[in-house]
Length: 432
Image (tube, rainbow, N blue to C red; front, side, top):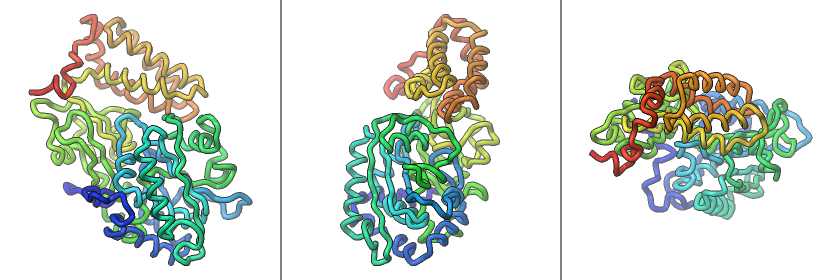
């Protein structure tokens, strides 16, 4: 488990990796030709057998999600790719679409064929204009080459692919809010049921998958389900992109089998920045409970991380050394969630606002110990009571930080201010 598995990232070092010619040189679109020779249900079964689980954070089995589509419906079927990556610390889909957009496009075509859809959408954040242009170029190249359009490669299968730009809202990463935005409405979560598989985009049966999930499909079709299950763990099969950021010597994307540990990834990344030690880290972005040094050897798969008290999420490993104030970090995350709350439900709208107000006071040393119990009580009133997972995610860093670093919160009260110099945690201020 100490070696990387460059599959989605294998051609990132090529100057023309984002072009059709560069992708085909590495075997691109071979899987599509193979897929078009199979029955759609065979591909669905192959994805089920592979054990591929959603790479957007939830980890729901991809093939099972595809299988939820009703056999008969008067409405067209749709495939929607969630490319609205915006979780703090998460940075895997954006570089993947920049460096290798055609693996996503090929995955979209194969997946659409498998679920018998003739219309696919890739929903991208409007701020990442460079990524949007790359995707639009890739879709245009694929269409010109005959991979998108009518009678694809003489198979009789027709597909149109649209790259749709959002307006920049974190809430649109939630699949039903994404659908509302795609239809032209304000992005807010829908009440479920009905679930998108039954009544999704424009009321039709809809599959919504993350960029990395769909991008993994071509390699499964080309190499087989057994090849995919040979990596990872029994219940968390395959590979994934782990994003290391923060106080690490060589931050970046590390594509490795699920089940690898942070200790192993840090060895590959040169360790914590020189002269410092690990204090805390997130296993799956800011919406997952934080871990500490004692969790260095927790296998990074869905089951092991869950058993240790957190979530694998998007595998956004944000690394913080001893110069970082945990209260300040949690405050910054809470400010993000308060800003991005859509306001549809009271627990999230009001709860994230009060998180922000209380943590500001606590970070300034103006609170008291009883405020910690108020924060925990507030968290109980958000968790499981909000309309979507944004509220639940907002509670994770607050609750876990109080559990693991209660003494640090108390030091703020005792000293009447933050005991940390924020400049020390910067690249220049923390130099040895």
